[in-house]
Amino acid sequence: MPGAPRPRTPSRGAAPILVRGLRVAVLAVVVTGCARTASYPNFRGSAGMGGSLVVNVENQHFSDVVVYVSTGGQWQRLGDVTGTGKASLVVPSALLSTGQRYRFRVHPIGGQDRDDYVTELVYADRGDIVEIRVAGLLRMSSWWIR
Image (cartoon, rainbow, N blue to C red; front, top):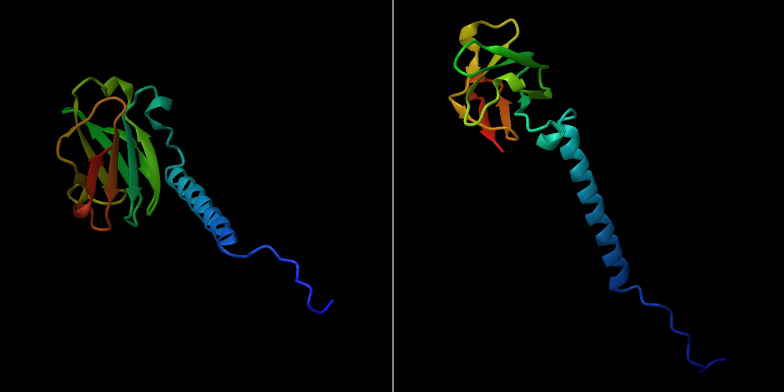
């Protein structure tokens, strides 16, 4: 009918944009959470380790490295980290005590002892997580506790 009002159709205004934005935000949170968990595949956190001292190592060096720990005596091997890889290592419970001081050493496989990166004294307790980033130049490596 000419002159009859046309039926109104639902508006395509802000609602679809908000829904699309919400989907993107949820996807970003999920992807970020998965990426954080996947960065240290063996990481279970301090609760899962019974209050252990965990050492997360990110090796940006091309050589495989061996990580050692010392409490003032001899160096004890914690494990290997492949070149440009990541690993979660655990300090043996026999070395853990309250207020203990640790020193960590990173040795490139096939390198000489003078090439090693050795941290200064690290004061850490059970449940702490020591992060070590092995740089392309070992002397530029760094560590922190979280």
